[in-house]
Each structure stands twice: as C-alpha cells, then as structure tokens.
Image (tube, rainbow, N blue to C red):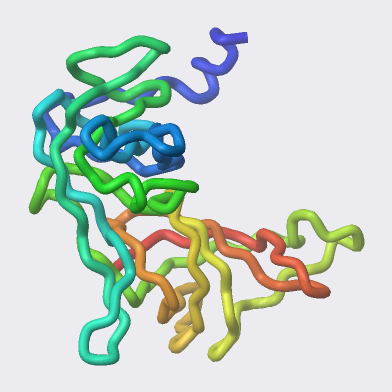
Length: 221
C-alpha cells in the first residue's frame, strides 16, 4: 500500500532551512475547569508543518490572528507568543519537522485557543509569514460536474457578483466575485486569509441551499 502511494504521490523533498510554517487545524485549552490562575497552562495549537523546523523557545506569529474593531472597521490582529512545548508522535520533543501532526504549547491566553478558536490561521516565525489578504486573484479550473450533487449538475462559469465559498489551507471564507476575466477571477473576502503566490483554494457554489465543490483556484496575486 505505502509503495503504491509513493509511486503515485511521492513524498516531496523537504528543505529544513526554510522559515517554519504550519496551518492550524486544532486549537484548545488544556486546563481543567476551576484550575487556579498560578497553575494555568497557555493555549495549544495543532496542525501539520508545511516547511522548516519549530523548536522550543522559538518566537512565533499567528496570522491573520484575531478579529477586532478599530475606528468602526473590522481588522485582524496577528498574535505573538513563544513555544513552551512540542508534542509529535505521541511524545514530547524538542523540535518538530514536516510529517504527521504536531501540538505546539504556547503562552497564549487559553481563552483565545479554546474550542478551535484559531483554526484557519498560519503559524510561523515573526515577519516571515505571507501577507494577510482580503482580496484574492485566482486562476480557476472548474470541474465538469459539481461534486456531491445527486443530479451531477453541470458547472457553469463563475459570474461577476457571485458568492463563492473558498477553503485555503485550513481557512474557510466567503468571497464575492468582483472581476471575471477568462479563467481568472477576483474575490473580495468577508474573512481574510494568509496565503502566498501559488497557494490553492477549493471553490464551492451553493446548490439548493448546500455548498458543493465546483473546482479550484491558484492564487496569483
């Protein structure tokens, strides 16, 4: 089985010298109810490392961060913390690399990480993460039929003004199409994403009140 997977989807080569990055797929508060303040542990985030190496005592940044309001305008503020523990393969380690799931213990207020509150964010070293984006230009490839529709509905081209659901990394957002040119669309998002050029986004359209996968887009700028 593993040999067949490797033949069709070979394990990519990893460069440990690249700045470390991880998509957050879980975040939680490990403290038991009623724990005294002096014994509280910081919030924990978990996910799969995309590149580089995380080590205990590393300073980290989390983007886009948390939603807040500044002068009646909604913004997302990055979070900053320090790695105090790392768990991989069911044990505590001093450093973590690509492959498998990793739990990162931080000094963040656990109220920020509880109940998967930070899903969709990216973790890395300060000033190394991609830009936080409210607007995405995507080169789109649509499927012939919408995935998950009983009638195998044909997928029409995306039109200007249409609302599209996107999944990029672990981030989920809804965007309104503000420009369509051939196979390229521009979306304005209701929730920003942290992404770099070449990142892929799954695209879904609503059919009979349900979102269905219709294709994917590659982030251009």
